[in-house]
Length: 247
Image (tube, rainbow, N blue to C red; front, top):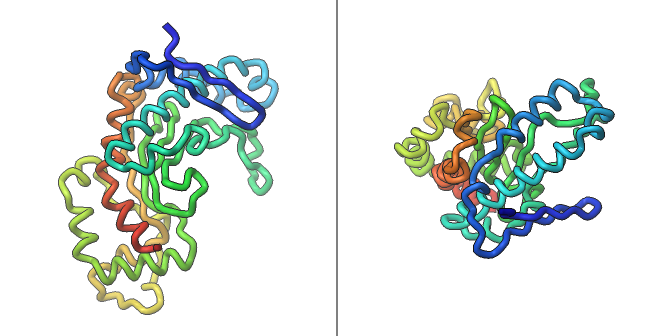
């Protein structure tokens, strides 16, 4: 039984889920999608990609259905996410090679970002990355603009007790054993802060992200989309703190 249909117009993808369909198979990643990405990693050039475009279309359809399932499940605790479409979230597979020494044309992963303004919104949000052996759910603010970073640092400094409550929650620590990662950190305290500040390790950070890794086998299970949504739910207080800081 067909559960969904993906139609494509130039530059646009649309996912339709048949009313009353059994969504079980939309809640997991197909093994063939992981196999395709592994093959692409070994054959990352335009000729192979075009010769195997049918496999790409199938994997893209599978990933889009999975993203749709994540949107539905995340909307249960973060309502604005429910207004997103898969097109709002999913990144292109083509790499921007203009300023890179690596000229391979395609990413060897599929990824989607979830925030109220879509994947390009300059705010904190959720993220899912599909790559054989390297898949993860993540979230936070990877590269805040200088003025946003200044506001976040100020918010952490002013409300460090609230920050600590978030990162010390048992649910948070269970999902994100590595804690907050910084996308690089300053060697010295940022201007206006002292080394003795109790929040100094966080104030030196240039970004604020968390990650939870998923094995290939976990993503092949029917509860995979729920597992990703649970990860998003655990990081939601962090997302809210960061977005309130930059308002």
